Length: 386
Image 1 (cartoon, one colour):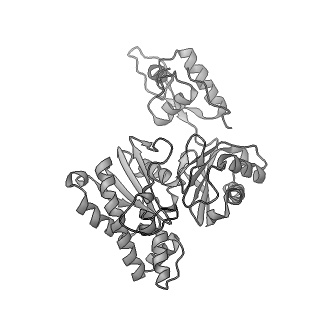
Image 2 (cartoon, rainbow, N blue to C red):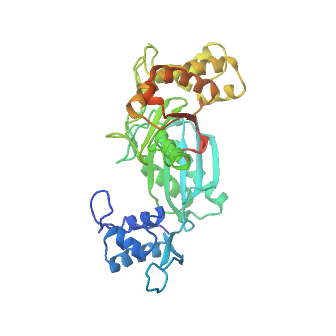
Image 3 (cartoon, rainbow, N blue to C red):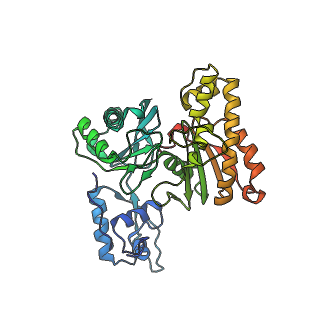
């Protein structure tokens, strides 16, 4: 069962300074910070009756269940406190990660376990109406494969390779997404889901792919890292930054647009400017260089396949691209002082990583890299979904 609407806020745990609503209590239980009624009263400052009302709503909606009794805290004895648990079985979520020529979609449990998954060709240049309509069909088939009903879906998450205004869920001037600028992605994907399942629209959340990959990788592999940077190098180049457990998006979603930093080059970028990093060091740029040399390659995924097969020309160009990206990352590392710098995407292999390290450690101050781990993706193609 989905909770309809957002519970009203009435204690003291919310970031905005308002009082705690049912959603805040749910987060306290899910995170393990407060798992009994008494602990929730202490954490929120709410009365016993108000906590009870908030919890009744969460129980009715299926978000919480009662677990075993906890230890008796009082020296006078008494009944053990009943613990509260997040119920991860009453609903599922859908997720999709769009790249320029390929997409992955999945049905996931509320704890992030992938229950059914599909990857295939989906060309972003075909436009949002066609692409999102096809995603709706994929979702319907995946639900059937997972053995879950469409009315169990709590929401849909979508990763896109462009800057996203989080308030509207629309991409803003995306260089590699022609025809998508300010398109109503949320509305179209919700309709596509309904068209293929017969179930009313569900909430749709949209964010930049590098942001979501960074968040997935940080939460699952580096939860104690307070400053985490992921750089995705595929057809384009983008970065996701996680600071103190939250994605840093900038004022309107434009943070991390690393591919459009100017470098010492005169190559024309797809954004219309000359000298962008993506124009000389992305998977798309490497593919163009290979094609000029007579090697069949049209995208970052083609370069990835060539690297996997040990193609020497692809390896040499990937290392050169890594050096160019590493030069820019020296500034990023100096500015943000991250604990982990992760390289992900089609070019995230040994040649590219070697090139990054060569220039990064040469150009950045030793103080900035003394406690820095430069690594590759752990989740791979699933990072955005997770």
